[in-house]
Length: 234
Image (cartoon, rainbow, N blue to C red; front, side, top):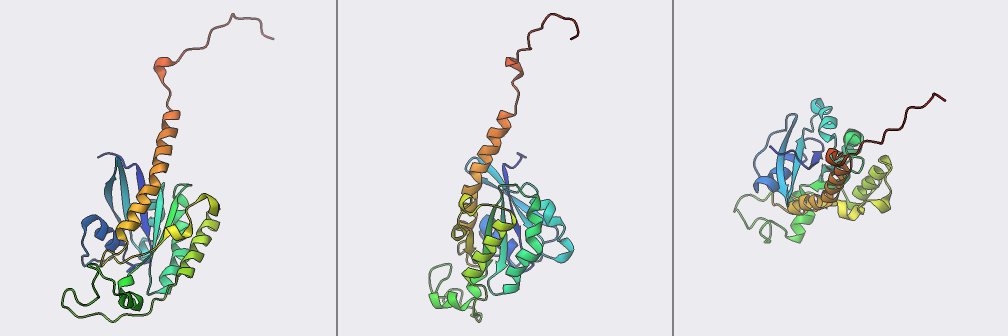
């Protein structure tokens, strides 16, 4: 198997939908899932590059593994549940420190999943097919709840991440570009999330390749230094 050109890692508390997001994108389905044990990954070919996407466990007992999975990551997707403010706070309290092993130029995206369960979603009439919720499928309509996490909360966390990483806001993508709301169930914004990040990590891949070539010595063109006459010790 060809070595991946770059790595993207999903972090977040249990039950925020990390696995569902990844399976919606890679397998185009929304399966019944169980909590991830340890970690799992997919390999995605994006243009001429191979990018590995790692799903990690949110359970406390697997918390220490996240640092290992983040090692050398080109991008980290921090996932929370828009209906649970605590899941956003956990990103800062439990998961941000795990990214210390990521690439120094690592990109960060903050993703609020499960917007299909909010009242705002119902009022807007969004669903996968573009029709009003409840018309497709013919099943029971799940009661909607007010969204607990607001955009200003997410933007504030993004700024905290930049401060923690000692990154200049002017040298990284704007917060509005890196904060997403998604629905793994309907597919809303899932493709946009992953493909935006793929496009963003490609320049880093090219830079790594260039640096690697610069460090390679061409022995066929190597010329030994000219010998000088042996002289007396000075």
